[in-house]
Length: 179
Image 1 (tube, rainbow, N blue to C red):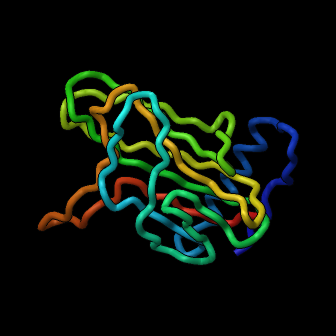
Image 2: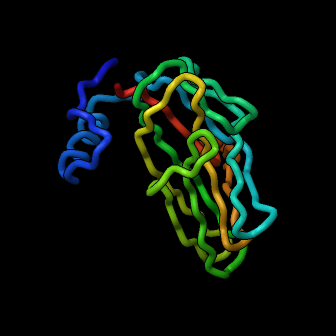
């Protein structure tokens, strides 16, 4: 499905135009339009504080041309603009407050102004963070999702199935081609 967005420009435009463009994208897409979706089905931990770590994806749930290379690099088949939606489920393993950062890298370079910062506290407390962003990509380009924290007492937590609910992924990344 192709969505005619508000005209795109590489130069900054007013906030309203960007918000309206994102609304058009959001309202015009549904799960069957996704080009690809990848998940992290096992919990992830950090071995060091304040040290970036690429998030590995171990399961591809939609394969409309998206490829995962070396478990972390997400590539797309065509030149275009792609909407990436990201969500991660975090769990605290101590009572102290800790801060967690998430951000994308394109071709190994941090993507400016795309970071997400969340604080989490209380032992066994869980929180879900999400973000979306549009990336201009060429064949051969890749996107990676990174995270870091100021404590190792936090994890990206996959949930086990119960008698009344299915299992949950630690991280979900869905990719739509929007132009």
